[in-house]
Length: 80
Length: 476
Ligand SMILES: Cc1cc2nc3c(=O)[nH]c(=O)nc-3n(C[C@H](O)[C@H](O)[C@H](O)COP(=O)(O)OP(=O)(O)OC[C@H]3O[C@@H](n4cnc5c(N)ncnc54)[C@H](O)[C@@H]3O)c2cc1C
Ligand code: SF4
Image 1 (cartoon, rainbow over the protein chains, first blue to last red):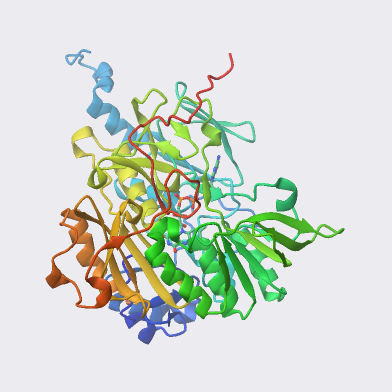
Image 2: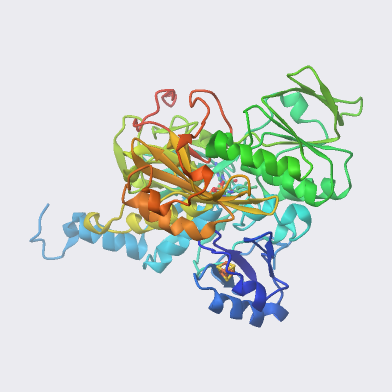
């Protein structure tokens, strides 16, 4: 799944760090770091973190590009 | 126009009808397949646009996120090709990637592509962003070991070289990107020298008072920081590999890796001669994201958003601002997309208060408003010495911006102050009784007329058509 955190909104409360420590971490006092791509095994953890984030700063999708999008040639499509 | 036409044929000319038709079966083209382009496309679908949507981008990949490239990615916390942006929704778009737009015909409403194709549109959204300013000497920029950082491929190449353990890294320019790269190098334990023309890092974005704290952070983390110095030449060996840098103070530095972090250049060349008000500082648009033409007249079918846009902000005296801000790209694309398919009275102005974050040397730096407008700064909470504070910028007696180092919790408060044009200096009761906070001091921004790579907000006057822009009519 692909992941992005709106770090303007993020308050560094670290709820996500407690719930999904493999994905989110604090670098110093309050700078959030995260892995922008997580495998299926972490889905539940990240979903819990999303729900717990008090400012709704976390966005995750598991939709691979929808069918009407024309596909990229395999050589370039390193992402999914 | 006849409203009595029974078959309703001529009613298509009524604005409501043509808008309904646009929403149902119109053609929208987005040029620039990155953050602003993607969020714009999603908003169009979200708001019911059912016509055809074409997204043109010259990079090979689907839209990806850039901020991690100078942070997690360089220290090995994420792969460079794994920052693809998550989608908010399905967009049913026709993607034309690895394809650059090379021209625009405003009259025929067509975008020209580098493969010779032309794509017609009813509404166009321009989101071509910016690229790294290259090292000014092309032969030196070509040396093996000289990098810039803007794309995921740049990050991949740079990351690989950092992992290979260079003897010393040279970072040219201590704006946000340069400072974050230096921070990553130190995290990797690599020796790094930062050369900055200004008196401190981040001086263009945050001024010298805060820049001094950034300088301390760098030095405490073992960066060899050299300010008020310029790199004058990069020297290669016989095999074309970088081996030395020459500085304006007469010294030289043995380095095998240099990162040029001299700011960004807006991608507007493809609009040269199109008649749009596009220049080196971006494409001028109104507060509703509609592009201006070279005569200063607003268009109604061409919209602009993100780093490439230059738009007037009501909170800052309607001065045109160009912003290199992630949050601006998202917010402006949402407004542009909404306005593209909405009737006049339902359109919205882009009133977003500029907000930015950076993390470097373990410190979370955030700003709100337009710091570079500030004449004075007051350290209202915390202290500079502890590298944990909130600083408030004032201009002509009102609060125009704030910056925090590890004090995010204060930002919302200052956002309100900015939005309500609260008086500056703030009343004493909202200020810590610490020595730093007693008096406002000059914010120490460099002379704005000097070229600078630093600011992430550029104030660019009141004219929708830049004075410096040269209008070259298309050849007959
Ligand atoms: C290393 C790095 C770190 C950053 N860190 C932060 C941060 O910490 N906080 C923050 O707020 N912001 C940060 N930013 C800024 C943020 O990433 C940008 O504001 C954002 O990417 C702007 O999005 P955009 O879509 O407007 O433009 P861009 O992301 O620049 O995208 C423009 C796209 O258009 C394409 N294009 C250009 N010309 C053409 C053409 N003629 N035809 C077709 N396609 C074209 C480009 O190749 C590109 O893909 C950072 C940027 C970088 C590079
Ligand atoms: S829970 Fe939300 S606000 Fe808190 S650190 Fe995580 S992303 Fe930021």
